[in-house]
Amino acid sequence: MVSNYINHHQMPFCEVLHELPECEFTFVQTMQMEQKRIDMGWYINPASVPYVVESYIDADKAEDKIMSADILLIGWLEDENIVQDALRECRKNHNRLIIRISERLYREGQWKMISPKGLIRKYKDHIRYRKAPVYLLCNGAYVASDYNLIGAYKGKMYRFGYFPRTRYYYNEADLWNNKAKLERVHINHREELPGTVPTITSEEIKIVWAGRFLPLKHPEYMIRLATDLVKAGYRFHIDMIGSGPMADELKAEAVNNMIEDYITFRGFLPPDKVRFIMERSHIHIFTSNHLEGWGAVINEAMNGGCAEVVSAEAGASLFLIDHERNGLIYEDDSYDKMFTQVKRLFETPELITEFGKRAYQSVANLWNAEVAASRLMEFYRGYKSGNIIPPEDGPFSVAPVINPGFFKSGKLGE
Image (cartoon, rainbow, N blue to C red; front, side):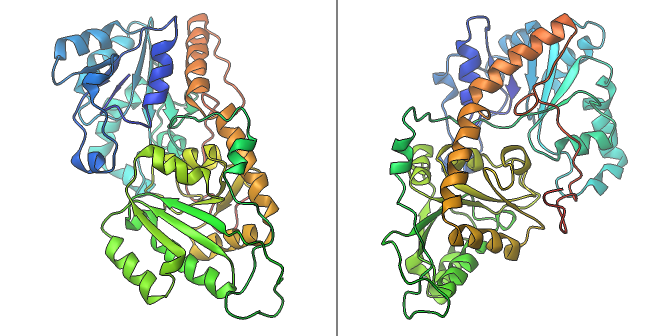
């Protein structure tokens, strides 16, 4: 596998491949991690990982691993030159399997495909291999639509994603015991409101949000949500994990709206501490817009048994979430539609447990590194025999071509 750098979202998949008896696995790291990622706690020392080769330190070894591979997985690269010889060779020699792993080409809008300069680059990197044994793994529900638009990988696009480390609860009761008992949660903290139910559990609904405080991720929605939930008389607490340019204004707004007692700003936390909070939360809310490539915190929160409320615009949402079965999806990047789904969970708390259990099973049984690695091996055997048979769902199932505008204006559920 060749990609920019090893990180905690890729490492579980790589570790499974490394441990397979039939597989000699190498990860070629092509650049050093940016400081902003290091500050977020992402850093893994590549020298400490036995299967990592750093191309900027040992270019000859990296080239040898790339050119001798039976399966070459190509992730995101700042400089494509390192894989060009392997790609050129595959057009003549079909002995090796090459698989691209990609997020969206046109996050900012598919109108960008009209750029002549961009199309020349897309032809060089993708289109010219349309008849070669080069396949595409789509890290997001709208990736296939972008590549279909330029005529690349037709009939050769499959679902994929990122696979953070999966925690398995062999006694699932241990997971649910970490969460507070859910009964009716609609109350008024100050005076009883008409139409509310006064008999309340002493526990509160725990909500978690995690990510960088950037406009594309809409952390401001959580301030609005806390304000509206207080007005509606609900009992809750929100953990905001992360930080970023919007941190000061969000904290100031929380004070101005007098909801600071309902939100804890926890800053960036190591992955294990993030999981600890998720395992003790009832609802995970993911508010990113169309600029979000995947959204691995959805995997992590599902693994922690959270009921999901996620934006349809993010890459992972339509792959991981089966609407009204293991979570809820909202459309149009809309706060009001997000609030409607959250309110639905507050008013029907049994759905929180139901969705949370199914979310956990979705990750434990399907969307995890072990399944992804096993299916890669099955895909390779199918390729070698000339009979690729994709599974019906999950990693390596056929990626549908979903237009980015499909889940807008009432299309949800169609």
